[in-house]
Amino acid sequence: MATERTTLGGTSTEGPHTNALASSPFQAALREAIQARGLSLERIQARLLAAGTPVSMATLSHWRSGRSQPERTGSLEALARLEDVLQVEAGALVSLLPPPRRRGRRYDPLSFAEAYQDEVSFARAFEEGAFDQAGGEHLADLSRHDRIEVGPDARIRGIWSRRVMRALEDGADRIMTLYRTDEGAPAPRIRAVRGCRLGRVVTSPKANAVVAELLFGQGLRRGEFAVMEHEVEFAAPFLADTSWEKYFDRPMREYVVEIQFSGPRLPSRCVQFSRPTVGDGRPSERSIHLDPHNRLTAAALDVTASCFGLRWDWDD
Image (tube, rainbow, N blue to C red):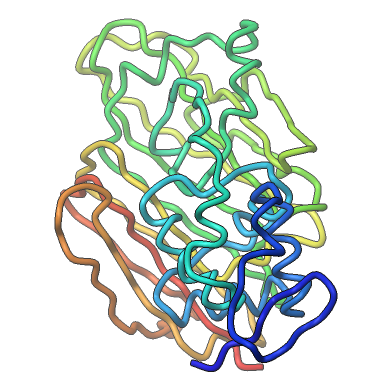
């Protein structure tokens, strides 16, 4: 691949270099490299996707702003590919990463997916008692069904989710869930639909995110089940992602996902993918097609520690 030298004042064709980046914090160096390369985040995301290391628009935006940083294996692999996209010397950005951030305790690992890079933004709310920290630790997620609504503008308008859980201990009476949108957009709104009601909510405009309690209405006894549904509504300019990922920290018997496109614009290429998050298993992906109802659908059974999802491309 031909490379350009990235500098603060322009470009030349003398090969990649790191001097302009070496003294900068990671996020500042990343901003400099993006500006020097002249690529939008949309184009960067598309190139990372084509290289087999997909990263959401929200995550790229948070890396650039310093609100989060690449830390997990998949994110570090994507960062290495990003260096290639931005035509800086290999390791130039990776070497600027500070030590991993201290993370707050996870209360709902299936909702606080590893794709969310900075749930630590909400740690203070937990520490100050904004939430009861008991419920979600004592629940097993058995089944989940997510439906993502994509509007005619090719942006995600909302999410509907149905979950089936079993109590592992007496007293479980709630779960917590977190969603984020793109930088500059309003934080999404979470709404209880069935089998639960909305508890306390903390919105972080700085992180473009909201975390909320979903209350069952009573404590469960060990072995009892809870079935609940909730919705997430995004506001204009809506969510620009072209992929949906679910990270699983615990086993789950069944996961189903639908991407509903309202048209008239429909994706030109669609892929189902999965990759392990621990161990030496190989990632996999396959092309899939819209059904007659303009939906992408996929299911995973007996899920272990992994990432599973769908992504789609639009014709220019």
